[in-house]
Amino acid sequence: MRIADLTSFYSPSGGGVRTYIHQKMEYLRSHDEVDYSLIMPGDDTSVSQEDGASIYTVRGFPVDQKGLYRQLSDVGTLVRLLGEIKPDVVEIGSPYLDPWLALISKLNFPHRLVGFYHADVPDTYVAPATKFWPSLARDAVMGMSRRYIRFTHNQFDATVATSPVTLRKLEEMGVENLHLVPLGADTDTFRPGRRSPALRRSLGLRRKDQLALYVGRFREEKGLPVLLQAAQYLEKLDHVHVAFVGTGPMDDEVRALCARNERCHYIGYVGDRDEMAELYAAADVLINPCPYETFGLATLEALSSGLPVLTPNTGGAGYLAQASQAGMTFSPQDALDLLEKLDRLLRSDLRLLSSRARSFSEGFSWQNTFDKLFSLYKELTDATASRSAVGA
Image 1 (tube, helix red, strand yellow):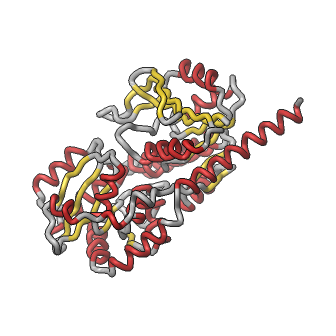
Image 2 (cartoon, helix red, strand yellow):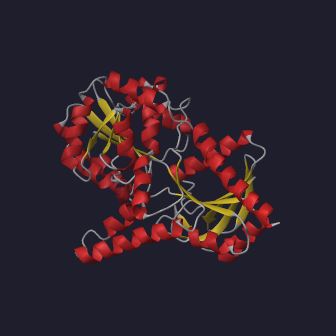
Image 3 (cartoon, helix red, strand yellow):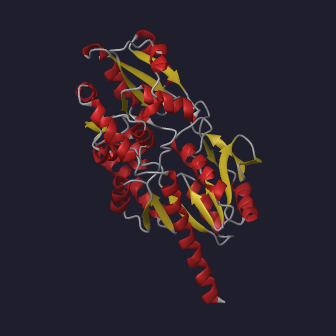
């Protein structure tokens, strides 16, 4: 079986899609029957090999100021590459130009298309961009964005959702051929036993201090502004500190907060999984303020590390917090509610919540994720083979 991932959501600087792709490549180390290719954007076109996978970089234009993310745009090169790869299945990992690039290529090659819904575009990007518009205009644009998702995904042979919350949203938009495939966690790497008093001391924490951790891109749609606002009032809580792990357009704002508030700690981008696991285990709670998560990978990794979690009461992260019974939720964009719930959570029985968190996370694994996903791929390719045999 030949599989190609086509995504403009992949960034070398991290993110959930990067983790998903790298875990997929790790899974495929023991599956020699699969020929895997990744097609991602860059500033030029190139090809390399990594862990038995073929990595194709195709020219794309930057979509943020730092060029951390790019959009695939070289149609000719992309169509030529897919002609050379001859994949049985192409998985589309971002919703903008990528679906059209894949559909154009399908005019020439008979591969199956699977849409992986990594981002809730209408609520994550369109709603915030139009929040100050007149209601009629805002509703019209939101309706257009949902119809766009429905139209593009209904051109695919299947669409993958990673949480029941996301599945319901897609159903409400009218997307068909939906499949629920939850993401996983590396429970061997992310575990409570990695807690390091030395790491806590390196952040200036004393024994009685409690540490809340933010892990994610420093971007507005990740809910970071509400956390930055809440962090300005940390003095209302006894002995509570917040550490920020990540990078992105709001890097300067995070650094400025940490420079003037001794309870806030800038850690920046961490690319090493073992280092990240030690950071999770060194904390007392994870705060994921994003109300639009399709799954909440950092939230699951934190639960695997035995961390109680604080999330909005919406989206995939909210689902994980509620389903695990190992955290609390707050009203999205409400800094005072976030602060109040953080205080309440840190005053709870953290040992009990940690045990619940770890137990819940053990029901998820990357092995299960990709067993389900590749079962779907096989189902689609078998159907193609059956139709070809009937046609012959």
